[in-house]
Structure formats: structure tokens, C-alpha cells
Image 1 (tube, rainbow, N blue to C red):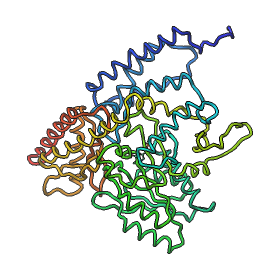
Image 2 (cartoon, rainbow, N blue to C red):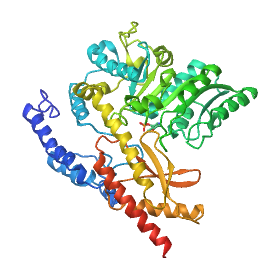
Image 3 (tube, rainbow, N blue to C red):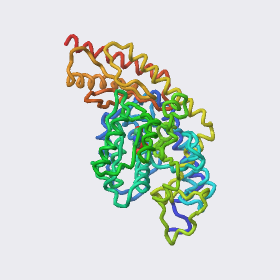
Image 4 (spheres, rainbow, N blue to C red):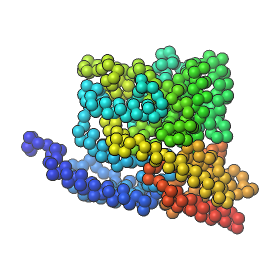
Length: 479
Ligand SMILES: *Cc1c(COP(=O)(O)O)cnc(C)c1O
């Protein structure tokens, strides 16, 4: 075997051919997304099991591997890239970011410390600066890009713990609403707190945290010898898109000396819209904010962010030194991301945000989010005209919840009926909705966030909802 060149080093023509072959599958896939089913999991488990395979000893040609991916594995999924995907929290998948990743991965520079690639680190730092500007943070604010909102919430909770509690922190209690994303509880436990130290405060009829109940609980805990230290509020809950009163939260946090963290993983980027700015007023008063570019900014999965009002509070938690790391910065302008987060080596996440934002400007992203707010209003207006439908949660941003509620049915009956309603809506595969539980009620959600979802698809989906409602109600009335 020759050792002057590894077969892993592709020739120029092999590199070009590889990208061309991949593009020949990617482009038709993207172009046909509107015609593809919004979900298709029929036979997906069997397919998955059939793909169990031993460690490959010899190579396979690219064409057959692309066939496997595009003809078999990719289609048997929830089609999270479809314009009809209105489930959970839709993501994006901007092609620009795929190109950015191709560049990042190909040049494979090291962006964990400033000294290794100053200009590339600056590009990522610019992205963080832009996010800080969007939420109204001062120029001195900072933050990090993470793999997603869960890690951002975890990092925030650890920073708050280190900042506000003694080393022996088990008397520390944290507060959030009963509607908080489950990653908040998971993060608190990972940060070392027993689950019983987490106070889930009840919400009002709009699923917003009850401020008076929160204040009472804090007082009770202090009286019992606990150390309240952190309040996590929602800038858009995952369940129904509820936005807590951020100004009231900031007032209370200031009064009580709590760290205020705003979980804006779903809703934070709506600050780019007029309504969002109004709804999220006060967000800039938070100590830290989670934003998920892979939600609101339409990026591919794997891009979250944590913004902090005072970057030194991330540094005091995450700074570590080692003899083999000689070039760590003391200058605040020259950022070592490894000093602000648990990661040392990290992918160049900045480029996948930077490239589409530079190519289009921020306006395109604001327009996309304005459109989602408008579609949510359209959905609300249309749903109100469908007989038998009850609106359970009006859209505060771009998520709404509803159910079928014929007269004279008990809770269990309604829940069973709405299970069938959901199945019937999803059956034509033109839209895909997922349910949630709200006060023991099984309800259906419409979550609008995909950059590919437009008015035409919303109307098609509403047709399917109308037809499903008529069919299910018909089956109840004359069994
Ligand atoms: C999605 C979401 C999270 C978790 O973010 P990931 O990127 O999935 O890790 C946290 N909070 C809220 C409100 C979310 O919607």
C-alpha cells in the first residue's frame, strides 16, 4: 500500500463528482417537498431494522448509498421539511446553511479559541452580536451558539447557580411555569438540583405564569429556609405558544434578587416582528435568553444559542486552563468560545447563521415570521367557522390549540373523539399536526414556523380539518 497519499484524500475530480452526485439527489428532493407526504412512517420500523449492518470491511459506491438514503430512509419519516409540517415546533433547513456547513467542514478550522482562527471567530461573534441587538441587549452583552435550546437552558441554569448560590447549593430553588419546556426540568437536574427544588407555578387561562402565585411561593420558600435564585419564564411555550409577562417577571426578579432566564427557544425570534416586539417587551431585562435559530430563523437542526447580559458570568462558570492551551485571551474583544461554554472543540456554527443573514439581510427573516403570525390569524378565523370546534388557545404568536367539542360528551369521550379527529386530519398527509394535553383535555395544535409554509398550504390544511370535523361529528350523531 502506498503511503504518500491516503485513499481518504479525494482527488479534485472525485470531490467535484461527489458533490454533483449528492446535488443530483438533494435538489429534486427539495423541489418536490410540496408534493411529498407531510409524514410517512408506514413500515419505517421494519425498514430501520432491515438496515442493521456489520462494520464495513470494504467500500461501497456512492450511488447506491445515496439510493438507500433518498429512496428508502429519508421518505419514511415525519417530513419535518415539508410545508405541511405544523407539528411540535417546526424547524427550517435553509439550503444556504447546508452550503455554509459544506464550507465549514471542508476548511475545518478551529473556532474554539480566538487565536486559532481570529477572523472566523469574529464572524461567529458577529452573529451573537446581531442576536443581542435583536433582543435589545447592550453592546457589552454576549453569548454562545449551542447545539440547541436544551443545552442553552442547561448552560444558563448552571451560570445562574454559580452566580447566585454558595458551593453547597442544595437549598437553592428555581421557579418556572407548569407550561415550561421539559428541557428546563432536565437542565435543573443535570445542574445538580433534586427535582423537588423545582417549583412549577400554575398558569392563568392563557397559559401564562401567575405572578401573584409565584410571589407567594417565593415568600413561602424563604420562610421555610430555601434560597430562591432563578426564575425561568417563557417567551412562547411549546404547548400553546403562551408568552409570560416578561416585564412583570423582570420586576419580580429584581425585587427578589433572582436570576431571570427567558426561554425563547420557540418564540424569541419573533422580536423581529411588530407584534412580537410588543408581546416580548421586557426581554432585554433578562440575565440570559435562549433563542433557537433552528426554530425561528429556519436553520437546520443543530443551532441554538444562549445570550447573556454579562458574558463574564459565563466565563466565571466555564473558564478552565491547561498547560497545553497557551493562547487563551485576556482581551474581552477577542473571544475564546471555549471559555464561555462546556465545549472545547466545536463546529463552526456561526457560518450557517452568518451566510444566509448576509445574503438576504435580516428583513427576509422578519417577513418570514410576520407571515407565520398572519397564517396563525387566518387559521384562527377559519377554525371559528367550522361547526363543533372549540378554540382552546388563541395564537399569542404562531401556535394555536383547538378540539372538537360536541354537546353532552364527558371528558373521556371527548378525548377519544379528538384522537380520532387528529388521525383523520393527518390521514391525507397534506398537513401533520400533533396533540397535547391541556388541563386533562386532549387538544390539537397548529404550530406555524416553517419557512416553507404559506397561505396555500394553510388553506389546504383547513380544508382537511373541516372535512375531518364533519366526518367525525357525523359518526357521533348517527352511529
Ligand atoms: C424546542 C424548545 C426547547 C428545546 O430546544 P432544543 O433545540 O430542542 O434542544 C426549549 N424550550 C422551548 C420553549 C422549546 O420550544
